[in-house]
Length: 295
Image (tube, rainbow, N blue to C red):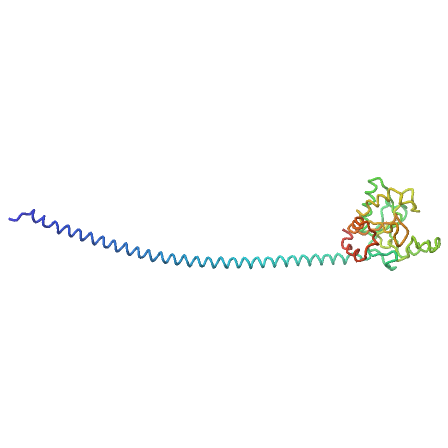
């Protein structure tokens, strides 16, 4: 009878071999599977890297195009701004021309034997000077409507500083000046030309000029240059746009410290600052201040 233990012992190597074979198969499969996955991942990595490279190139191209668009946008923005500035300049020019078209150029013309105002010239608007500022309360004195507020401010401020002045004469028509000059000529002959303008050459016809006086001087006007009023006017009249038309040594008439003409604040300040007379300036220079006449 055979020994069963010997049969088992002889079968052991066969079982072990079988197990080993199975293990090898399993390990081989796992190796193959892992290798396949590795190759797959390796291929995916290449694809990803290629995709990343392509994406980077695309982003670089987009960034370049973006910079180009920004430059174009900046250029267009500058064009729009320049166009806007041009429109503003044009609008400003149109505004200035419109403003100039509404201002009477005669207001800054030189008269006094230089330019002539015809008999039909009358200021665009005249207003009566308030009674408290008139030397003769019963006399109807008128002044250019747009200039009257400047005169009132000047006289009111002078009163605040205890300097009382009164308007003796203001607007005169061509006809009124003609009659006045004729009367002076009868009394003084050719000597009247030293202190009285012919009709059409008087600044009073503009409605922007006044003759001032004070108590103690009255209608004769003699000695007005010795008064506190004259001193005050020399120091302050320009602030309100008024200048002395005929200072000492002028080429037209005798010294007239009472005769003040409105030329606008800007021009009056220039004349005061440079210590010049209105008639010293070239007419082209004077005309540059017409735009700011009522400012």
